[in-house]
Length: 359
Image (tube, rainbow, N blue to C red; front, side, top):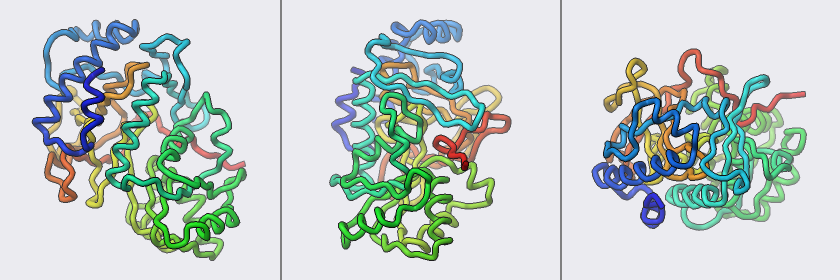
């Protein structure tokens, strides 16, 4: 369905622009037609835009939904009886949240894509994993927050998964030191959400005066940059603080959202966010939504071949960014690369993961 199996069989960053566009265009046509036929609200929106899903068009011509529509509408392309998991977006207190409904097929696609993408950066073996969060977050397995979904998804990449924080969001030194003793001399994977790592790991460790020997660790993190920028914390300062408390120097940020879970964009060694074969980005001008040139800032549209239970395959985000290159990254991975510049003015502020509130 939608060339997914063919794409999943290829290395995730192996096709140049021309070959990927040819494959992606056909898959986008199929998935758009699929949701048009199965989701009444999506069909009404597409018809209102005057788009005919049977008419051939380029990748940038397929219709998109605004990200916040998932806060006001429950969009499904599957029977409710087939839904096995409902995920909610992050949001600060009082904000409405997106609801995303997953069936088994969509969930399986998300898992396969996540494994394929991250393995290109982390290798094919499962690493001992330290999650910079609390296990309390995962108590309700049927209703997942963005933060919980991220932790559960990435936990499948690791082994001996250990949580660095207790139920009060305090450092659990006993658990962390036992984990490091068990895996002394091994490469380990650390995972968490950016602001949580800064607030409850980096700052807390610095205040404790204790050092954790994780020099061979690899950190994968995402989300929460708005809060760090508001505190005047840059990416370089974040990485330096991490090095100073535990020695971790290999850090991969990622860009993703609950509306397209699994279809993440990983930051490479050169600091660029990469589109895989499962997904793509188009940056659009604020005025007329026409595609921007490389290097021109606009609104980020994200495309994904993963969701079949809901029409989340083409979403216009509220994030500003720019395409930084195509098939030219020094890291050697092919495809489009981009940078995120922040939220657009007057956009609803999105919380960090779930937005952890003290007390």
